[in-house]
Length: 328
Ligand code: GTR
Image (cartoon, rainbow, N blue to C red; front, side):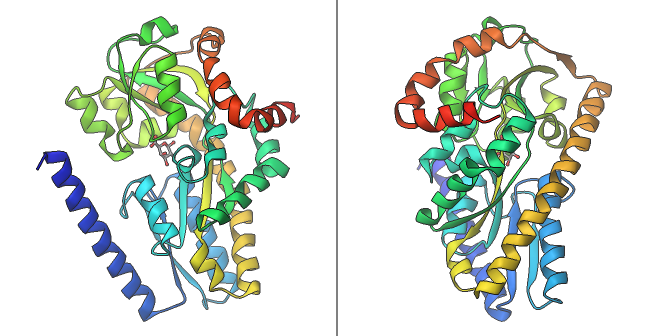
């Protein structure tokens, strides 16, 4: 058996064991909801979940409780989405990129240079388009609760600053498990490698990849800046985060509790966005102080070279893309 197969097998066994352990925990106390995030506890998205927990526990006087498991303890994003569909995880915060494998329309959110600004993105997510896409998740045994902010993603690597797409040529760049991200990195001339977030640091160390792409808070908190010091702010995509819930858990709750949980998630959103905006500034300052070489390439060429993605994804989602672009 190949090493990667053995590792996959071990991971499967670990996940089933985690699932069994979690369901025991819930069987012992039916009122405990399991929430998870792949970032550490003090990261803004995980703090968003902590806020949801606080609100739910306060508004029910402790009748409902929430346990927040941070740091990808329950698996990588794709696995945790599957565990959420199965009802083993109740509440989960993930990036919209891997969600496209579960609900195809979510691919649109990862398209390059789609959102003009944070405000444009907020108007889309908080308006009819964002609500409609959350609603589509019900067909996938998930309930979409809220969107969180994740800023803009940019390239980092350990070879050279990226001033134009020509500098990406020949670089191996880790991407999320997302077809759009794979297509984007190819269109810009680099080689994409869709490995798990948790494996990026060691994969840069061992030379499997030269770098990755992410927002400044992730670049800092994962310590990727230690092994990839060139951070080039092309800001190619603004991929939102989404808070989802297991539909089986949701269906087992009465209407009043459903409303309460939806309200808690809604109220946690403004809190997360404020934390995010502060942390983004702090993260940039910190990585700069720790020696990252930061440059800001002109986006025009990146945008031009990534246009073929709009031909490909426009075929299925042209209408949706047009509506997003037309949103003020
Ligand atoms: C981060 C996101 C994570 C994960 C990660 C990645 O911005 O918050 O949940 O999706 O990117 O690149 O895998």
